[in-house]
Length: 253
Length: 303
Image (cartoon, rainbow over all chains, first blue to last red; front, side, top):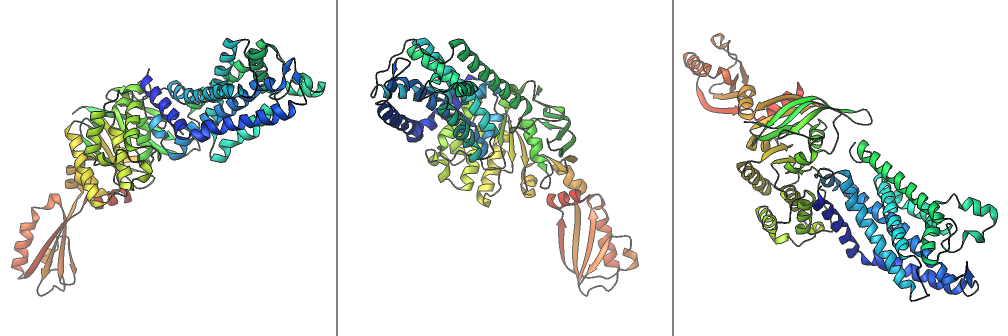
């Protein structure tokens, strides 16, 4: 295994984060702080509790998930799209690296950035509300698994995209609305029965529900179902990436 | 010499149906400089990309130092350095970091002394901390070469290495390529500057419309295909070629008498001068010309 090659890609991608600290870290942390102020304080003053949890505290897992999902996708998509755009991808594809190693480098870095961001938002939340974690192992497990899964998905978007606009389409027009409608700021049980059923078609509902359960022991769907849905997204992404590398789609032909 | 690269029955058909390579078969010997010549769109870059693993061949197989490029891709790619035609660089990286990154990609442990050596050889040492976006085109081209050499390859592909590089720098690069050859590196060169191939190549391959039309040692090719010409200035000029000279390929152009011959006919020159003397044809000046590799190349591609 070419671990040094993996390390080179990983460190190269992580270096981009330090170079663009404002965009990578400061911007999402500030945006999340604004959510706490607007939703936590303004709405929280009118809506005291959801499922027995104070509203400001209730939205913390959803806010972390909102940033982790969008940043995992954006980081991984940009990471692989940029060398495609500049042409430096030739160097990666002509190096003695298997496709698994290439993915480990790019997806590993994108997931790491998303996890760092998730942890920073978790720390930031303590300045605004009382946050507690009932199941720390599961909390870390969900955070890592979600970051990896959606970084793989972002990697696919980066390979598929032909321009910067396409690179932004999925995170902005698909993931962000799904996250907002996936129970980041409310419990699915608060919706009318019809919309509860519609919400069950949204995969992000299961991610947020599982993650929130790890914090407060409260969830819209069972832990097993949440894990199953994440597992399905992970498996689909792995199979799609495997096909991309085997066929050379948008990379070799 | 042993073959470093063996190309057998390679076809390449792109997804859209365009066939870029047709049944390519030839060897590249260890330690030689091989110039692959061909007009735009002939398939040179496709062939290089196929050997380097950047495109997948539709059929056939290629070995590098005995290793199959698909089954043993780690072994073959470790041996190869590639300088692509396009100037593709990470604009925001420094010269030192980008060259070190390339070495790491190929699984090599960091070796600052080696990186320093190649940067100095390529006159990039004083630019090592500069970001690539601040460099000129010629410097970027040298950075590309430094990146390709960073993992100490045994085979170096130079796809149009001196495109857009000024004459002085181009000659400097030729010298570096010769030095690399002396260390045993096999070099495959594609170029639009036929002068470059004439100057450096041991063997020449000509590709046209995806087919190899010739592989030959450069010197043999020049000898075999080159046309020679003797231009004699006459006083007074001739109005017609005398019948005694009819067997020679002669042409009158103003004051000049032009004799075109192939290298194999050199022995006839002495006889021609004897006949000119007999005919009392006075020669006031003489010029000779031999066709260059470029003229041979143009002739080959036309066919």
